[in-house]
Amino acid sequence: MTSNSKETYRCELRAAIHQLGDRCLYSAAKWAAELLVGIEADAPPSSSFSAASASASSRASPSTSSGTPSTSSASRLLPHNHRDGSSFRRLLSSGGAVTATPLAGVSYVSTPIPHDDGLDGCGAAAADCYLLAKSYFDCREYRRAAHALRGQTGRKHVFLRCYALYVFVHALNYCRNFFPLINGKHPHQDFGIAISSYPWNWSAWSEQSLCTTTDILDNLNLKNHWMKDFFLASAYQELKMHEEALKRYESLMGIFQFSDYIQAQIATAQYNLRELDEAEMNFEEILRNDPYRVDSMDVYSNLLYAKECFSALSFLTHKVFLTDKYRPESCCIIANYYSLKGQHEKSVLYFRRALKLNRKYLSAWTLMGHEYVEMKNTPAAIDAYRRAVDINPRDYRAWYGLGQTYEMMGMPSYALYYFQKSSYLQSNDARLWIAMAQCYESAPLQMLEEAIKCYTRAANSNDWEGIALHQLAKLHCILGHSEQAAFYYKKDLERMEAEEKKGPNMIEALLFLVRHYKDKKRFEEAEVYCTRLLDYTGPVSDLIFKDNSHKILFFMFFLQDFVHITKM
Image (cartoon, rainbow, N blue to C red; front, top):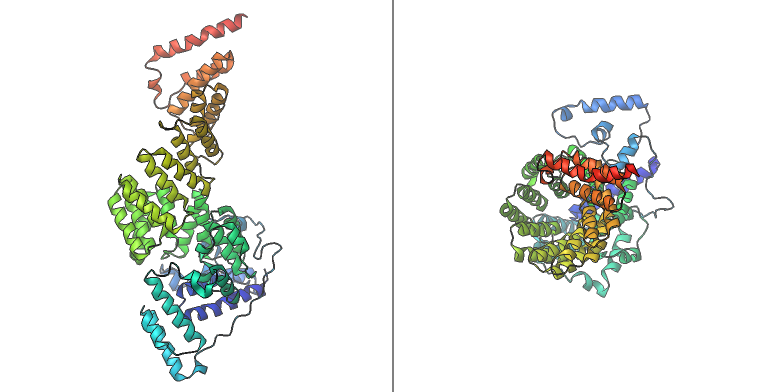
């Protein structure tokens, strides 16, 4: 990517920041500003040695040495300020090639930056009126802002008046059916027009509720502006197409190399793909670059909770509490902290606080449902999960939670329906297939063949806990499929050996294989597993061998067969 192309991005983003800020679109302006400083700086004309010296001197400045995080471009471009957490940065450090945007075979459409009609040409009275309305808007007095702009015809005036009324209606929760009524058109058409005419407003792009399927996404008539790549990556993330999202974001880092937003999205995709160690490295790096960041840190707290990293989660909780304890994300992080401590009542309290701040905070509803399950409050859990599903029917975690709750209530048929919904939405998650298989195994159903199909899907979906292989072996054994049972017991043994694990499952596998190969007259293989069983020194070995005499008798039983073979 040439320096001229990078400068084009910078010019577009700088203009967009001013225009969006003037129109009180603060979230979109913040997003554009963060993206602007994430663009890789052009190489200076001087030698690399001089550049390195200049960077070193900038690090020695008082603002950096005092411990205050520096946000200047020079300090952010230092390579040792960034750990190679993402796969893109690992590629950079190894000297590999990186495909920068645009993607191969894609050419971007040039969109001229619209002229920002200032307040100078509209008269002093109209300009003063706009400033008054903007001050009302900044103080969240939206109806006063709209009223102050009545009768004004300037573009900025009309926009701010409409936007103030929209925010007011949104605050009253009357906007559920607002979008479909605009001009009598489908909302996709209006957003396509809005985005094509002004593609730098990320708040318009991020209306993910409009893209609920890949068909809708494919049929959107959007310009090939470079902002489209950000939208597609975000839409893929929302549609659970995490690998595609990861590819898009890593490609975008070819230009926005130091964008914390992109790195946070990469970490989120890795978390959803169960690549927890890589995601944790990325989140740690983000916090080093921006220690007061709250955006996306709720996902980081979910990761730490899943890994049971109590000290790291405690540190993160303390940090966000001091930064801004009234953000919904902060409340969610604090709730996760109390949940990991086993204080589920306090956890629910903070999830409720998060939902008071944002009623459509999806993960708060789902996680609060999990807490109610822990508290055995099934009606409250079902209500929380249903609210999550109402917000986003593609939230597989909420469907899974409903399945768990109905399973606890002894209603496996209902549970099975919800597990099927969750596995359809997240087909590569082994936990969902295992839950469905256990439902089929339950006493009222006893559909073992269906359970085997589910466990097979789980085993092929990176079942890192190893539950599926062991259960497949047991079910095949129950059904009398000895060869299949032996196959899965051997695979389970190989997994346990690779992970250096011992326990009841290993003893069960060894016992079955000894008996199986003895019955098949394959005594040499039986002897191998018998020897391994006798040499077993892991936990629960006393459940099999009460003392040494039992070991000798156990071995002698097979020795008779071995002697018979040698005499033949």
